[in-house]
Length: 406
Image (cartoon, rainbow, N blue to C red; front, side, top):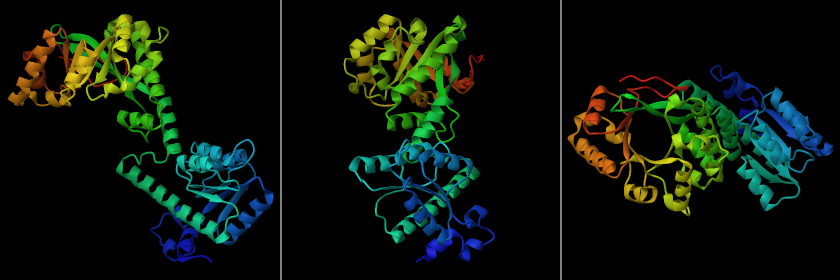
């Protein structure tokens, strides 16, 4: 029996016919049914059509993908056990063509591992055969409602100019894969105060993937997907390429996630970054939990033996400085931009930066102040003795290699 809620979904209630409702929500819901059992396929197709759905069918995963690539569905209803491309694999592949379509998976041989995989990769529901027709209908109706809400949220996000963001794991995987494919490095100059010339460039990760709109989102996705090593290797290769072809770029500053220290490719002599190690400064944030890295002294010694220098990034951003210094013994320290912002107006910040700069230089470390945006900040930091400056005042990050102004 069709409920009032299902009537609204399939387009026969009065409220759905209102003129201010988008036409895509007034149309009957489109369902794709996939099953290699012809009898079950025909039975489910016939039942759904009798309830007002527009139904397409396929008896294998490949044909289902072709249909999903050529038209939009509100729900995909698929058997799990199919030759060549099973239901879970189909679910993952569908995300390449539709990030939001709900997928209901049905199996006659339920297992804990299959159920876990179905949920991990974003199945809307996981049902076991035999499925009660009324229960199946209720699940399909609810899936349609959720899908149309997702489309409206996506539309609202577009209107507001914000990203709706990735949701389930398979959606996150697709977004991350696209981010990795579109990854590029922006370069921001670091200026030497004494000569007022470019000392080097920091390579900053950028992506054109709208679902992961900033570097932090890409990093978070990589962490959730356990692919930080893939992201790190890709970023390092991209950072090294333009610098390797010109001595004019000076030193290259490259950000490392703490787990990158565990990646054997970091010390591989064949990597693009290793080949220019004598010109590379590896930045490790002060916020990093360095205790996660075993044999850190040996790893850092190996990097220095290759020619790399080590920098502590975001100094002053957290109460971890003593630990970071003791473990890293950096050649370079980068003052967090929170200390730099409006430093010309704060005597307290000036005292802190002067002391930190003096202590760092006494230990033989270069001091970089990042986040410089005004002439007053620049002049104050110069007076406080900072060796190197970086920020929008000199140049915004851009393709290799933006020029600077003083």
